Figure 1 (cartoon, rainbow over the protein chains, first blue to last red):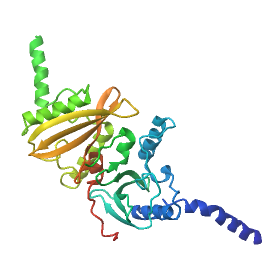
Figure 2 (cartoon, rainbow over the protein chains, first blue to last red; figure 1 turned 180 degrees about the vertical axis):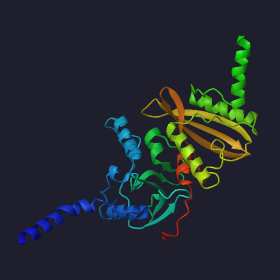
Figure 3 (tube, rainbow over the protein chains, first blue to last red; figure 1 turned 90 degrees about the vertical axis):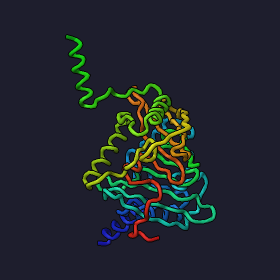
Figure 4 (cartoon, chains in turn yellow, brown; figure 1 turned 90 degrees about the horizontal axis):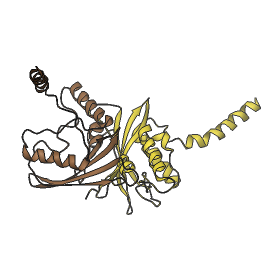
Length: 161
Length: 167
């Protein structure tokens, strides 16, 4: 009996980091974004694995960009989660979701990072694939806004000037 | 005997409205030509629809299907080349820029005025199996949009917050 408790305790301890590192566990796009940024808030260096939260297409574009760069900095030279190269305070955010008019398996989640050094507002385009909500593209709005899939493929995204 | 046969073939093409597949040898030249055609015949000209990558063509088709299923039009109900439903183009300029790492990707930038309003558009070309094809179109600016995102998500500007998720 004692051994069973020990086994259960050991399993819980071993599983805890994996669960903590799995913000994609929430089943709703808004909840996923809230969970990811809650993790970033508590650990500024933490980011989810691309394969866990991005569609295969978008994850593939990130991998292809890195491959094209051959060890150097690729087309993407900033953090697409914060639209910055340095640490960003994500303590205060607002998040809203918008379901596509035609299909329930697509939803746009708009995130605004608040504060005086805010990098702005991002739109996360979610698509449900094989029962799992995944991010198919990211757009940072504004004068110098950009679309992640285009930046990853074409270097120059066209500013919003 | 050859002449009637050729005439018959031509008649079939005319009757079906078929036209030869569009071949793009240079993306900027192609875009320049399309806008010249818009300027020449603004009320009747329609751009070719066989110039998109399979991905973008599939998004067009899926959007149309979603619209028809709903009894109307899809998410895109305007012309992506002119960002509107009516055309009066002037002062068109076209330039091109290659991707930093790969020679099979080119961005073509077009500037113009449409009914006197200045505008800019980016065409993202990719060469696939030796053919230059458009993989996306983006109109920048406060009311800007990206074609692939409009076709999939309705719009990529000012998404209306769903009341299920209050701030």
